Length: 178
Image 1 (cartoon, rainbow, N blue to C red):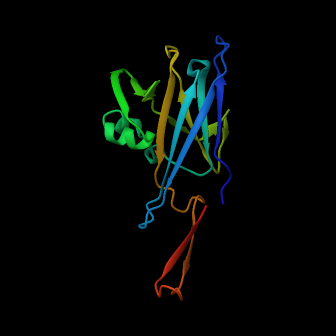
Image 2 (image 1 turned 60 degrees about the vertical axis):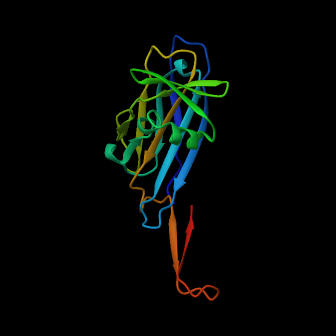
Image 3 (image 1 turned 135 degrees about the vertical axis):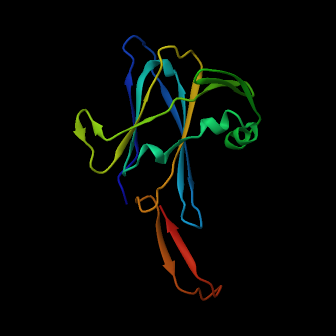
């Protein structure tokens, strides 16, 4: 198995607030082995963050990262499904869309992450960093980022063990572990 995913941030010097993060992870196991992993990050006090970093413990390209907010921002039914409730999609201004779920108001932040192959000048041999540079104009509301990493086959996230015919079902089985 690979090492861990890691999330950290560079604090904005001019702000005394402390950001907090709510993390959602969905692993999509596909019978055709086109597996994916989704990350949703709801951030309270986002204006306290200058840059957000997510270490991915395996090699990825920019084309492997899909910004899912482009789908959520235009498709209410998928937003409802992701949040298990009724989502109201509000106005979209630049990279920020107003969103409401009951009394909880927040923003989809459609910012694109940048894949980096180095950390402070040191080349990363076994992983990559997804970097988000936050805008100075973020307001008081929480923001939500959501992205998918495609092409995770043979990256150490899943291990599959093929079994010959099962004595109970008489069929071939695959055992999958994380």
